Image 1 (cartoon, rainbow, N blue to C red):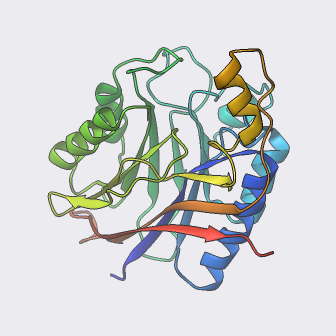
Image 2 (image 1 turned 180 degrees about the horizontal axis):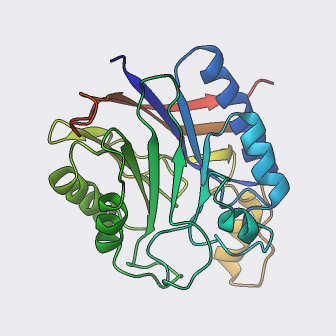
Length: 277
């Protein structure tokens, strides 16, 4: 069976992030570098939350699935999307059991004979503002619940600390190799230089980066952030503009034998694609 390529894009930040994602996603499709595209859209609405229009824009631009993080309920329009089983958008799996929304997103096979892709997002618990349950237990629950023996899974760990992200990656490599083919970190908006393949089967990176204005501080105007940090005075942190880029990783997967749960990552390639000017 041919290789499956999955492109995962980091957090989309406001209008500049949506523009950067649109340009990059279409470029990857045109260059045949991605069979499936997944993007974190939790900051797509003015830097915090996801509206229904934002979701449609990301889907129209080429996203096969959209994930969310600690801002998953910031925009009320996202809740009906999360509750709709037909929409490939999910909230973190380790929120309260009574929280609204799907705990996983499923993308159908890209081509006949290819595996379906299940995406599971978990929040970190260390230095994160939103309380969450055990991410390791949530991953175990969601991966064990995948009934399709030919499916593969991608885990997103939306967290602050690199140690917690790497721990999740090692947990998946040691316990869920053959099903989980990648563990991608998000939330910090800074792409890390540590892509690797753990145990010869699970691609991992601590953070995929962001889609948005890189002439900024994590997507916000430099002057606003400096004013806030140097004076401690209340400051509106507006979305920046300039040098729009989309960052993420492309994971190449050998799906293995159908039904054998023998899938493995065979490559991970970070990218940072500048928008056309």
